[in-house]
Amino acid sequence: MEAVLTFVFNTRIENPIPVLNDVEARKLATHVVEAVVPADKARKGSKFSLRVSVDEAGKVQAVLNQNNVAPALYAAGTAALKQWSFRPYINQGAPDRFYADITFTFHVR
Image (cartoon, rainbow, N blue to C red):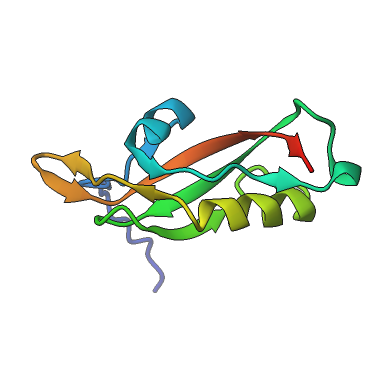
């Protein structure tokens, strides 16, 4: 004997980690270092974005390459973002972790 057994259920994330845009994240930033890219890797004025994961204390935990930027740009952005610090993001009255999409404009050295 064979039978099909089906379960119906709904899922949802109770308290999803917020993703801040560049402007919102920079308002929380207390120490900012801009990415510097070698002249042969980019044109001045071009832009790229990386996602940073920040803990409850405002410290950078990880840098994610959501947009698959070139390795040289990812390395420059990661080196800069690892030096950033943020004020805590307050969610429902308590500090919370967050993601932020940071956009860099090329500053060629």
